[in-house]
Length: 128
Ligand SMILES: Nc1nc2c([nH]c(=O)n2[C@H]2C[C@H](O)[C@@H](COP(=O)(O)OP(=O)(O)OP(=O)(O)O)O2)c(=O)[nH]1
Image 1 (cartoon, rainbow, N blue to C red):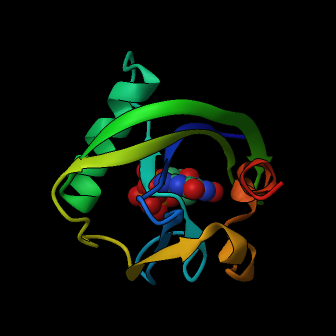
Image 2: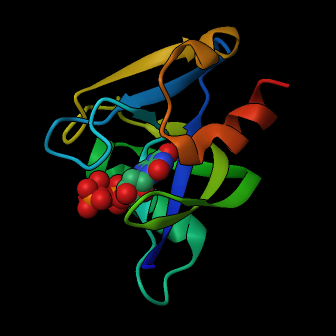
């Protein structure tokens, strides 16, 4: 099965909230929440990919912090290796250019969203 390597940002603000992004009807996994980010390009390092993806997707600049986890999830048609890092916005306001919407959610309420299955190990670490 095809595998894609994806990097996701757990963007945290000064109010202990995490930026959550809802996948749109035009995307795969529509209606699931995820961490903003995307596929790592050939030869690109993880942090560089994450900075690039957030700039493209949310039109803002981030600083990448602590590594969270790295896990592979098998969907019916694709294997997603999701690597997550904590991060913070250093300039700009996030704008949903591809997602259905964005929401800043308190750590305590993160589990109430319907998450993409590959994101569960990251949530388990964040919410423990
Ligand atoms: N960015 C991101 N992608 C995730 C997460 N969880 C998860 O299963 N994915 C999956 C969805 C996609 O199959 C793939 C990331 O692709 P992408 O964000 O670069 O691109 P995309 O929406 O254009 O992908 P696709 O519709 O072509 O599958 O990883 C997550 O938390 N963040």
